[in-house]
Every structure is written in structure tokens, then in C-alpha cells.
Length: 361
Image (tube, rainbow, N blue to C red):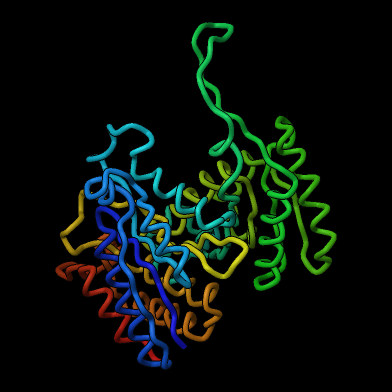
């Protein structure tokens, strides 16, 4: 099989970690007889520097023409003072909209080899956890009406949280479908005791749930969910929630996993084509030093194989290679706390080599 992948290395450590994932994909191609054609495009701060805008139309066209897209990271202090329309993050929101990506899948699991890195109590860590955050990506307060006006106490700013029934239905179905492939349990997060948008969210999720009698669904207020994530993360299988709540809770879940450098994500729409990226940022302080952890990007490539190309066996092979590398004691600097004295952590290239060495059919 042949697949066209558009690469968006972006800023900071983005080029290093995307390069690592490309090496792993090429190795998968060799083992399983696939051919991956890569096209590299600009997005983010590097696009601002080269083209004066964070998302050139040529990049949008290349992403829409591809079978899937792999993103590194965007942003950095170099561009923090630019007007909002020129900020690197504007490119990320723009490509999601252009590709029609409304579902963000963000798995968070505790690797047995990295239990020492989890900040939770030992009895909680011992249970382990493996959950999937399903975040609505193109609606809610991030895309609602906003502005400034004269208010009761003088000048004020406002941002509007709004969701349509259609937007809630499609993200709910994505969550229930994900649960069918996992342990069959969905927790829907809202703030229905206060927000009208959350009341519509809850009503719609339960109506969609009737289409999935094999999946259980439970409602949970967002403040309680934030608490339960650190009190009993093993309680969660699939979590579905709005754009802003999902943004916050998925970052919380990343921290209890031991390292943000291990967590991939997939942004999906109505077609198989998606945008795959690690959840960490561009880490400009370590860019170019070859010390970044490439595993989240490599695992994002595995999610691409699974969700975009229906290559589940190949995705399993990558995930197994990562597991084996960690079990064998391979560590980059961000997860090196358990290394024996005198043993240096692996570089980005070194960890990539460790995964490649463990890849097999």
C-alpha cells in the first residue's frame, strides 16, 4: 500500500521529533511492504518568518491533498508579541478548521516501567490507568463570539460558550465508538449545574447513548472530574467533554502519566484523514540539542497508522517496540530519574534507534 503524508515539523523541537517518527514509519514500510510518501510544509512560527503568516494556503492545500498529516509543534517566545492573527497558534486552529477536525483523541496511560515518575500516591499508582480523552475541537468558547465592551463596572471582555446539537451529537458518537473498542464505558464531563450549554450537552449525550446499549454512560461535573483524575484515574475508560474542559483535563491527565513527552494525540473529522501530533509544546529551550523525547511523536505516528490507514497490526508493532524500549530501561532526560548513577540518558536520536531496534513483524 502507498500513503501520502504531509509533515508539519513546525517550531522548536518539532523538526527533531518529526524526523524520528519518519524513521519509524519508513522502517514499518520496510517490514510490512508499505510505501510512505512525505511532503514537508511550513506552519507556525517558521511559516511566519518565511511567509509572514502562520498557515500559508500552500500548506492547507498539501494537507487536504494528503492521506494524513503529522505535526511536530508550533510556537515559542520569539513570536509571543505578534498580533493575534500572526501568532503561530493561529495556524494550528486554522488547519483544524480547514481539515474539518472536530474530534481530539488523547490517550493517557501509566507505563509500568515508569510508575516511579507518576506524582500520585503509591496505592493509586499501583492500580495503574489507561484512559482516552475525547475532546470536542472546533466549537465552544474557543470559537464563540468574543469582544470588548462597556460593562457595569467599566470596560470588560467577553467570550461566548455555545454548542449546537449537531456538534454534541458527532463528538458523542466518536466517544461511544471509541468505547466500543475499549472497555465500554463513557464518562461525559459538563457543568450542567450552572451552564445552559452544558445542560444541552448532557441531554444530547444521553439521547445519543440510546444508540449504544452496549456502552455505559455516566455524567460528571468538571470540578469533580478534575479531582477524580488524581484520586482514582483507574475509574476512567473514555472521557468525552467540550473544547475548554477537554483542554484542561487532558493536560492534567498528561501530568499523572509521568511525562508529557510520552503522550500522542489524533485530531479527526468525518473522513479518515486526520492530524496527528504529540501533546507537548515546542520546548524552545532544548531545541537543536538532540535531547527531546521522540516517543510521543512516534506514538502519534502509530495512531495515524491505526485511525487513518486502518493498519492496526503495524500500529501495535510500534507501540510494542516503545513498551519494550521502556521496559529495557531506555530513557531520555525527561524520564531518567530511575537511571543508575553514572548512566546517561539517551538522546532523541538514541531513543529513536532503541525503538527501531525493537521493531519487528
